[in-house]
Length: 585
Image (cartoon, rainbow, N blue to C red; front, side, top):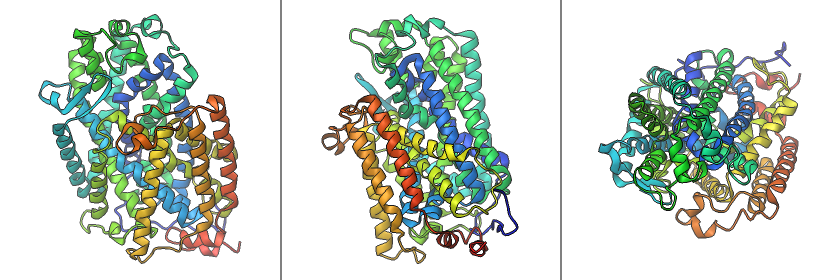
């Protein structure tokens, strides 16, 4: 339904932030988040699991992410507010839902900056002068050394400084970086496919197109291992909608455009990587799925090349192909590309905490804005500090990517249900963009997000639940010590379906086909407590069926627990000051 005579108009400029972003600023904010460390490491990570059939993983993930992007496009146009992903569920289901999914949004945004920094440092370790920054392991991915962590801290400090300059300057810097970031993968694809392509890598050299013994499960496992993470980022335009000149005209186009560009680039990047790697490396080490470390008995130059491949995949591919100048450019890009993404996510995390404070969940200090730069100072600094904490338990790209992916799709999962609820609650609001076939795509989007969470594995899911509980603790402290006078009364009617969803997913994950044996379960205090799940008692088919059924059950359970229209009007007053007037129409 479009606008009606009684439909209120959106109220902009109520949050005190600088509305300086146009269409390309929004598009490039999302694109610079999508094309980050994922293009540098995602192709290798997927190939290690599924070989050439990883291409199907990119296609499947692109479809799921595209559906979620369409849903965010509608919500962002209707509610062009800062930190939107943390506020949509609040509008539809109340404060408990807003606090839960707002924290998930913040968690993923704060953790992306360090993962991009890790990628940059890891890639730089292929240079002689930085070789001590990354310690290789004989049994799999390595970790950053003390010097590597120190370099990562310096990069995080630079992100803070650039964010404090303000959104207009940030947009100019980000636009230039993103243009570079899109250009370099495209050039790499063209050079490797046209001049250094080995078709045999898709067959006998790498162990066959469907190399793993269980190819369907392997393709599924590529999604949380780097593919979905690589495609994430479209929501950055949503998070920055409160700083856009004309969000209702530009937001949907920016979101959808960023996903289309990202999906095309990543699929071609995977093809180029698979075809361009020196076949001798594959045959000597036993195929794609053994390249995480040198095989037994493999040493010398091959072992050295495999070590470099894991530290800097495309740099090594270009070097072995004899394209030295491209290898040099790729090493430079390994700093620029992840840094651009980390820069934007530091911005996004600060805007999410700003939004959660506006909703009353975090201390009011998170809303403090510098009058000169219009940047939320306290929010930016705290986002960087929390990001630095992720460097301690997760000192490598591959160790952190699963948990970031799970937190991201948990954030995304709230959007399809919020869209369906708000269409029922506020049908008269003007929707500049409407998701087609929302009655099908909304539950499908929620189901897709649930699948990816389950695919992440038992260790990752339980780690995520620990992080959610930590968020509840922080919000409780803010309420208890009255650190925000706007703290709303808790709307507990959303708690049953949210807690029920978490518990149901916990049971499915425990009995399901994904785990243990994951990376997160081997870290610190989680090793012994969380390594018993993923028993595979219900098998792959049972895991997929149980996740689908439980997702649909929770979807309709949530819709039945949506807020009444009058309560929605109360929560959206800042955006639609006249919203309370349409309840009677």
